[in-house]
Length: 169
Image (cartoon, rainbow, N blue to C red; front, side, top):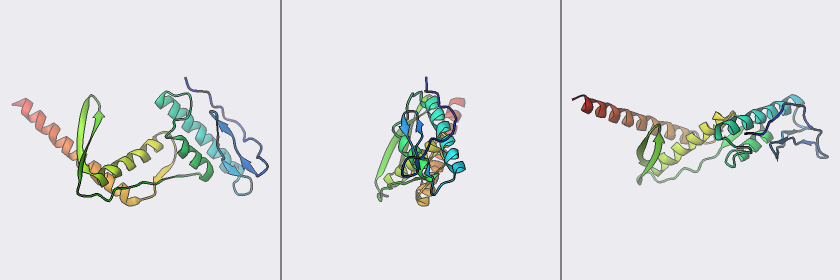
């Protein structure tokens, strides 16, 4: 069961002016009194509380998920999350990836660059799914990932139709 995270006021700033509330055992700097308004800091704090509650419910954890905490702390500091991606320059080498879709395993093939881009958009969407406003730093990663995803969905759809037609005969 997830820890309860209650809404409340901001804590007093430390001697440097940083406002650092604790959310589920982790301190997050939601702003500094010199450059953030109380409304901005309270909005960030409440968003982080919602994110913690969402990720706890989704992943069934009592604490912060290790992969999500750095993004939550970035949001606390800046009010946004910019996801950096390292896309491979390899566009010739074909790799395969297998993932579960419902009850079946699905195999996809693509270049390292396409699979990296697919991972990139999947990460951005996973961050968004728990309530953090995330965006990609590289639009080409998003474009490549979406094109790859569309092509993969089209191929899977065509395979499903072919299987269905073969069964009907």
